Image (tube, rainbow, N blue to C red; front, top):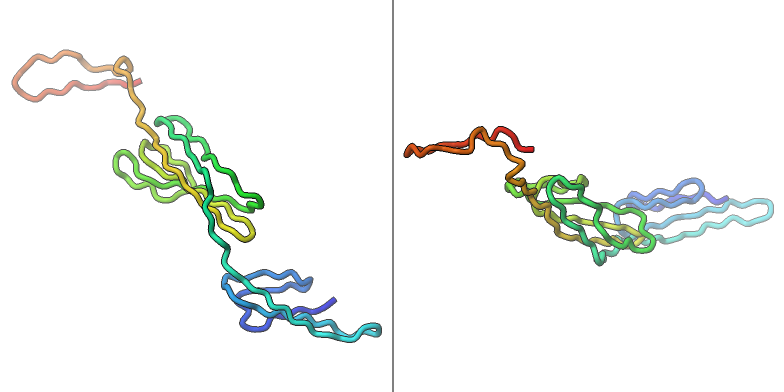
Length: 169
């Protein structure tokens, strides 16, 4: 078996005793040196191998769709076709509620009424595919027969008056 070393700069790369090469987080070229020691039957030899480390390509993930729902209903997963060889998939959501509050990027599905964007990222060994779709969580209508008032008649007094809602069911 040969021994393995990495010539500097290693760019964060490592090579295990069994020859398994792990790239670091920098791009560039790394030289791996394999040394075969001399034995009774073979002459020793040193071999250099240059490994080029590049960033993954970026590409569009076609046909990402997300169906909207009405407040209180369960938001289904987005629809997309993962490219062949997909190793990891990340789904995140962001948007604004109808009350104007920001919903920052999160892996949790939103539940409040508002307008949102779903982001889907699929990674293969050499490409990062990404796509997005917008959707709405609509406010739920409450039928008037589901509301109970403290009283439903007011007598005009010339001043502002309020009817109290005692129950919504």
